[in-house]
Image 1 (cartoon, rainbow, N blue to C red):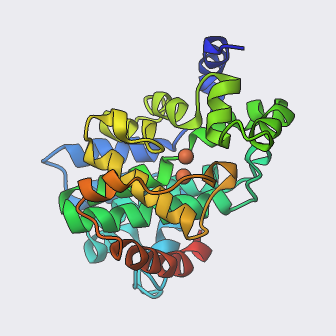
Image 2: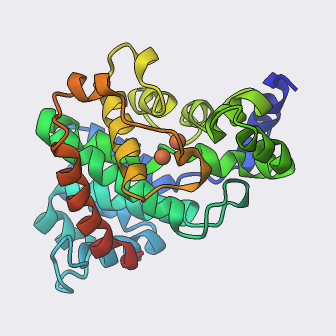
Length: 281
Ligand SMILES: [Fe+2]
Ligand SMILES: [Fe+2]
C-alpha cells in the first residue's frame, strides 16, 4: 500500500503518541530567554517530581561525578552548569518512552535506550572535536534519533512476516523494507513528528537523514548523527534490525575531518559512559 494513507492515520492519532514531558519544552523556553537565571531553570524542572528524581539520580552517578552529594536541582545546576543539567533533563524525559520492548524490530526492553545513549554520547564527542558549540544539540539529536521506531512498531508488527521475507529474500535492509512496505521509514516519520514533541527544526533535519546524510545539503549535525549511529551499531550497541549493512560513509568521515582512529577512541569512551550511567534511570 503506498502510504500516505498510513502516514495520515498515524498523524490523526498523534495526540495518542507518547508526548515528551511538558517540562522539557518549558526548560527550552526558559533557556531561550536571556534574562532568565539558573534558578528559573531549576524552578521549571522542580515542577515535575518524577523528572527531579531521575535527574538527581543521574547527577549523582559515577559518570557525572556528584557521588550522592547533591539533593536539589538548584544545587545540581550550580555544580554541573546549565549545559549538563539540560543533558540530564533530556535523558530523564526520554528514558521512559525509550525503554520498552519493540517486538516489531526485535528490540528487547532497554536496548533502544542503550543505543540512543550511545549515539548521544558518541555524537557529543564528535561535536566536541570539530564543533564544540554543537555538543548539546548533538547529544539531544542522538537521544531521539530512532524515536520513530516507537511510533512505527505496532504497524511493523501487523506486517511482520512481510518485513522478514523482504530481508530474508535479500531485497534489502530492514530500513528499505520500511520504505517498501509502509511507504516511509522511521527516520522520515520521526522528523515529521518532531513538531509534536517541540523539537527544533535543525534537530529534526538531522533525524530525517541519519541513515543517509547525503540529501541534507552538507548539514554537519546530520553527518555527526550518522557517523555516531553507524559507529554505535558497529560496536555492537545497535537497536534491532536496522543495524545490518550499515557502514560509515567514507565521505562522512572526510567531511567531519575524522580519522579512522578517532572512531574506536570515541566508542571506547562511549562504552565507559554507558556503563557508568545506564543503571541510573
Ligand atoms: Fe535509525
Ligand atoms: Fe540508530
